[in-house]
Length: 130
Figure (tube, rainbow, N blue to C red):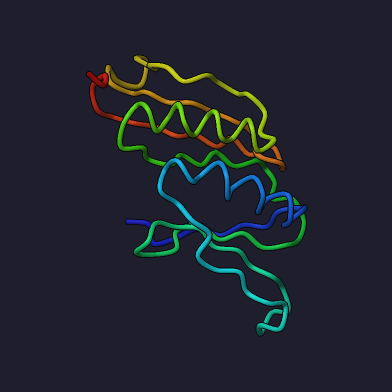
């Protein structure tokens, strides 16, 4: 089981604005914003659910190759809300909300590119909402 992941981004302020809005429909909030006075002298941001921080980003160079990160959604509406919020936050369309039956019959997902071009996905694995 993965505890958390971390990577560098080219513009931490743009990343913060994007992820604060894009991840809100999935229940994620920015839980950490460390000052540059930490032992590495780099500012870090951390997002997660109320129980723990799952994803960390720091200022630096754009991580290459580009990443694909999938966030689990509880239902199809959360996937749609993520997609709408991510586009409104400056994300780039990379796959509208819908079923992806080539993965499995209930795979419902949406994809956007974040400010550094990483493919960010929201996915729900349960059957179609009533």
